[in-house]
Structures are given as structure tokens and as C-alpha cells.
Picture (tube, rainbow, N blue to C red):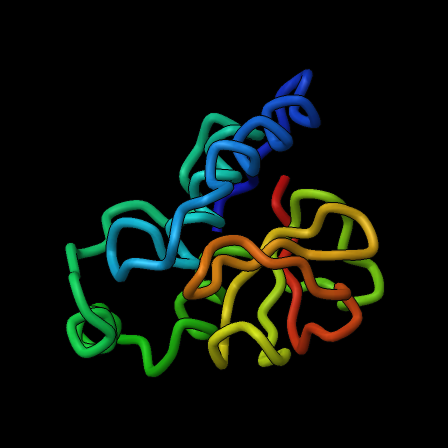
Length: 139
């Protein structure tokens, strides 16, 4: 697991990337929660922390892709690439996973302060960070 660093001005790039996703509804493989999180990490660091994922267009294809890579879950995949942090210590730009109402079970999100942005069926939604079950450090 290589260390990634936030670039100067990451705050503005994070905000711009989140704005760019406003109005985008969830679509497996092109506008899903992991794709959203990876896009924000690339904006902040210039690096994709989880490169080389297989293409998928459905939940079933995504699950098969994870198994093909040797992971039992999305959480296991992220654990293999990023360090975990306590949810209460998650900072802006870090990733969280939650099962909060209004988002899909196991949905990934990006911390923006006291809230995290998650990509739901109707587009981005905000949920309290402390609703998350797991958090990972980005840079």
C-alpha cells in the first residue's frame, strides 16, 4: 500500500470534483460510489488509489470482478489499498462506508466535514460522517 499525498490546493479540487457529480444518478461502472470516491482522490492527489479495476455494468458484474481480484467485498478491496482510520478521525477527502438510510448498503462516500457525500440512486446525498461504519485515509 503506497503512500499517496494531497497536492497543494486539494481543497478546491475536491470541492470542484464533488460539484461535477451533482445531478449524476447512480449507474454501475460509470457513476457509482467507488467511481465517485476514486475521482475525488484523483482530484486531490493526482493518483487513483485503486487502479486497474475490471469494467462492469451491473451489481453482479461488479461482484464477479471483486471475486476475480481475490476480494470477498468492496470493504476488503479498499482495505488492501488504503489505511483505515477511526470514523471519528476521518477528515475532509477521506472515504467512508455506510449503510445509512437513503444510500445503498455498503455505500462509499467522501467526507466533506461533519457530513459525507454518497452517490445514491438519485444523485449525491449527504449523510453524517458518524453514521459510517468504516473510514479510510486519503493522503
